[in-house]
Amino acid sequence: MQESKHRRQTVYWLAAILCAVAIAITFVKVKYLNFSLSDKASFYYQADATLSFEAKKGADVKLNISLPEKTPLYYFGRDPSGDSRFKIIRENGLARAAAEFVCTNSGWQNISYRFKIIPKSGVAENADFNLPPESEKFPQVSDATKLAAAKLVKKIDPEGNMTSRNFAAALFRELAAMPPEQKKVFSPLSGSSGTLEAADLILSLKKIPSRVVRGIFLNEQSRSSQAAQFLEVWCGNSWIMFKPSSGEEQKPKDFLVLQRSGKSLYEISGASNSSLRFSVTKVPQGAASLNRIRADVIGKQKLSDFSLFSLPASEQNVFKRLTLLPLAILFIVIARNIIGIQTMGTFMPVLIAMAFLEMNLVSGLLCFGIILTVGLSIRFWLSKLNLLMVPRISAVVVVVILIMQAISIAGNILKLPDFMSVTFFPLIIIAWTIERASTIWEEDGAGHTLKQLAASLITAVFSYLVLSNSYLQYLLYTFAELNLAILGIILLLGTYTGYRLTELLRFKSLVNK
Image (cartoon, rainbow, N blue to C red):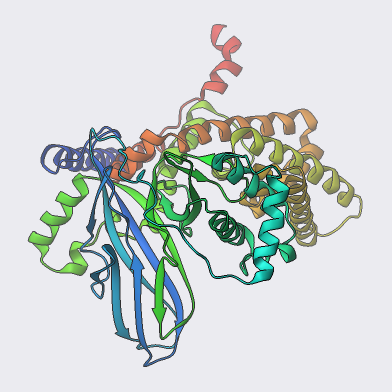
């Protein structure tokens, strides 16, 4: 008895220390390091331009990457924590990050240029980039290409009286529907890049000014992605941006232009099979102060970079998705140990909720319901074959894979992109849920099984609401030390041995007697 009391006191002290440390660190960051508890506070974007290539050992590699164009909305600056091999050069008035080095290894290699994008407060977009084109383009193409372009122009605008705006939209729609073999007359490229290049060529031949725009979206939805491409067309008094795949006019939000009218975003020699990808993440201004103080105190670069904010933007975006897991786990502990909700597996609702994040809640619930219904039906049939447990569960895993493939194909045919993301569901967890539900059905009946499945789904929905909360994500990522407080609360809940809420309701009549 005495030993049990001593253990409880140890847990209480440990929980108190963890909470005190979390509160103290948070206070210091807010009071002295310019961090804010509000997610609307000052911030900047950290962007990583990562160039992947294949080179031989000893190869002399030269490369340069196009940097963002001057804009009234943002300041730009090099991040000192990036690769030191880069230097800034200027070509035709535009900045490029250049590097030259000798490869020390053979095979695939990466090099990243890191820069900051700082929003200007209280500044609206102006007409700096709405100036008319300086000169017309005169593309050098074959007679066959000119003839094919003339036929296409005649087909789109037989009377020749369409406005530049309407003609550009119609041209994109026509090119999008054109077979790839026919489109190669205008461009050797495939996909949206080929459509964009073909449209730019045809518009130039029709003497309608146009220019290719390449840039990145300042959001954190993807881990890394290639630059987005649009075509701007001069429509009399302004440039209008069009989406290559559909011909729709675009005014993309938080779109940062990297290059206009250039041939390529990057140039490289001495290597092959190269590709350029970008990742962007939002960083609170206080992180810069923290890094400076840490560098002054520690002095060593490798140690002073010991922070989540020094990670590449793509990795930070991953951790931002994971940062709310401790809070979701705390919710599961409360749901099971305090409320008394029975779920199919301890953390199964959290894993299902993470899949919902990649889709959307309604589509996720529909997909989960389809997989579970079809999977359970096949599992009941398998039980009649009297298979051993491991082969039976393995068969269920294979069945779940086939169901996911069928849902993804159906989503593609029906143009439902959320259903194509069904692969984000945890395969083994779903297979084990089907197996467990089938076993409970056989032992305790359908009512008990459906009750547990419903409880699991409700818990998963609440976990999704926690995981999708942008403010909580900001708070627990910026103040990662708050996870110590969550750990302390979980330890305290681990000592609770009283009645759960559902048990109090269950035995309410006995208590009244």
